[in-house]
Amino acid sequence: TLVTPWHGSTGHDRLVGYTQAREKAQLPIDSAWIIKNEFEQDGLEFGYTGTLELFRSHPEITALFVMSERVAIGVKHALHQLGLAIPGRVSLIACDDAPEASYLNPPLTVMRIPNRKLGYTAARWVHQMITTKRTTELPREPWMRGELVIRDSTASPNVTP
Image (cartoon, rainbow, N blue to C red; front, side, top):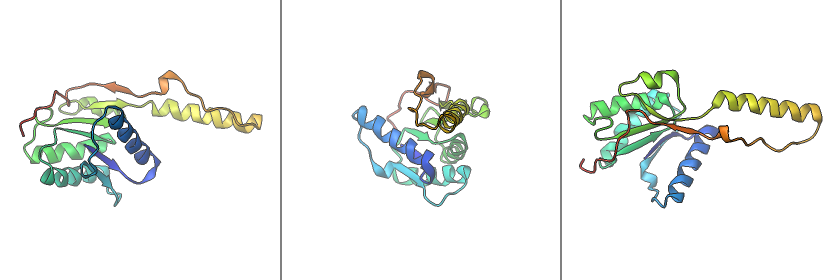
């Protein structure tokens, strides 16, 4: 299941990546399991209200993939109120790797994306285009891929709700 901001290119791109990964793994995509932040709520509030809404209609869900650690904190609060243990009943994974992610209880599993280094590389690429007056190919380096950092917020699925 995915909890994502719908506005902005980052949320959209992450939704596309999620969809492509499920298709590649030949896993079905249920649009009812994708909660979108169409009203641009704060990440904490969105994670909280979106999770409550999702579990009211789909209590069978065993894992959530969310777009940021702020959303994950709201999700954690909702799951706690619902009495659903992380990771015993629901696994939780977020994008990015804010410093506080490893200090949450349980520590948050994340898809680490090298945002700072990507930004620096993009700035260098744009500068090179401006100074050389020609379009160069986008840089593609192995380090540009995300890295899954497994912590204690994920476990094997528990099929008994």
